[in-house]
Image (cartoon, rainbow, N blue to C red; front, side, top):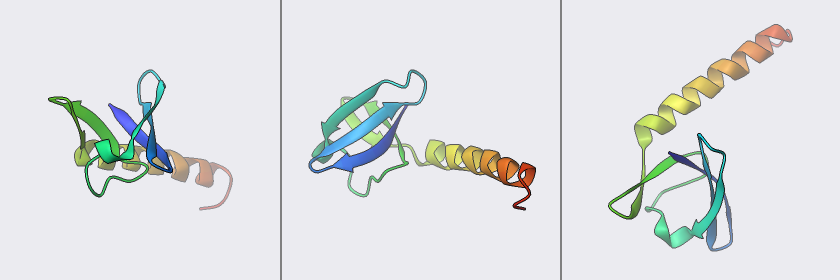
Length: 75
C-alpha cells in the first residue's frame, strides 16, 4: 500500500507505508480526485485509491495525535 505524499508539478511523490520506499509517478497515472494523504494501490497495472485504508490510517493518526496532545496538556 502506498500513500500520496505530495505533488510537485506533473509528478506525484508516493511513499510505501511498509517499506518507506519513495517513488515519483506521473500525476496523470492517479485517479481523478486523488490528493495527498490518500492511500493508493496498483490493481491490474492501474493506480486506484483505497478509501477504506485512507480512513483507517487517518483515524489511527488522529488517535496518536490526540494522545500526544493530552500528554502535553493540550486537551
